[in-house]
Length: 339
Ligand code: PMV
Image (cartoon, rainbow, N blue to C red):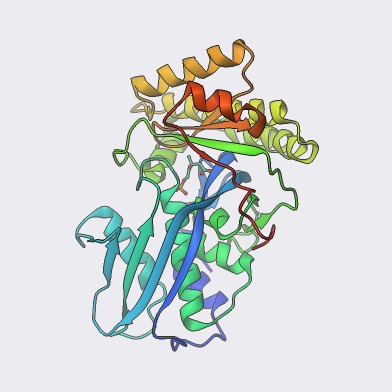
């Protein structure tokens, strides 16, 4: 079993291929990795070189509505705009929908509503592919378990595996060639006072996708060889900090892990720099505030925007320092750790 099609056939082997409803809708939260996934052991199946761990962003994410369409091609509408089928994001979404196309004239109309900037390093692809597979699962009434949904979401985008679940989510690297053991699971821990601040310095779609960026890093960075071990160490530190609700240990391990990932990117060739001058100014501001006693850390993905980590007890001070910050309490709106 080597291709995404093989994985889909394996998981859906004895499932119906006839829609159960005329239409289905599902939501998936965006997620921010505290321990990052960077680099693949299998590029076709999006199998990672390291285990990663994220926090889901509550109501920030994507809602996907899927309707069978008796046509040869899919229609994709994102935030009320029909996507040009010739663009790279449209082709990627279309190729993903093709995996779940069971008859020649059975395409889909996919309507996506994404309430975070699209493709700006705010994990929009993670929630998008997770919401799509959840809506397809609902359309056919397969009722797949979260582990299977995470495998199928991963075929669209690696980090989408983690957006199937809420709260703290660990996506295991796995060792099997077919990736059937590379699944996401929610941790039982909750941390109601933990806050995430989304600081958007740039709304523009990134110029180099994470997919291309991580491949370039794996292929050319002299620092990449150390990354899987660096990430494993961070993973242990982060899990221990979550269990102990030790905020400083969590913040330090997460910030350091993000900076280590960006160091591998910067040493790739051609060099890969997702930060803008505004990103660096913000980092220096956060370091200065921390030096002055404010308990605040950050993490950064494949884009210029930073995500700030702090506790509810510091929220007023953080909001005063960053008046435009979009603050989320990922655990405040959750009804169940495994929803
Ligand atoms: O899932 P992708 O291909 O968008 O890659 C995500 C990579 C990072 O956001 C930088 C890290 C992560 O673990 O989410």
